[in-house]
Length: 116
Image (cartoon, rainbow, N blue to C red; front, side):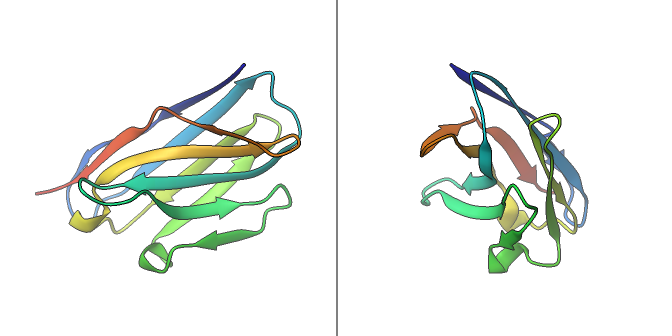
C-alpha cells in the first residue's frame, strides 16, 4: 500500500507564496514521474507541473515563471514552490506519483486559497 502525505496548503494574499510538499511511503519503488495537479470548483482537474526521475520538468502555461517543482529522490518527496500567487490559483492541489510498472497514486489533496 502506498501513502502520499501532502502539506503546505492554506490561505495567502495575492502576490504571496506557498510551498507544498508531498511525501511518498509504503510499498512504492522506482518512482518515475511526480506531479502536482489542481482542481478548482466547477472545473476539471488539470496538470500544474511534473518532474521526471532525472529532473526534467514541464509546467502548465498559466504557472510558468511563478511555480517551481522539485523533488528529493532520497526522501521520495516532491515540492511545489508557488510564488506571485493569483486568485485564479485557488484550488485543491493533488500530488500524483507514477511508479513501478505503470502504477499511479494520488494524494488526498490540500486546499490553496488566494484571497485578500
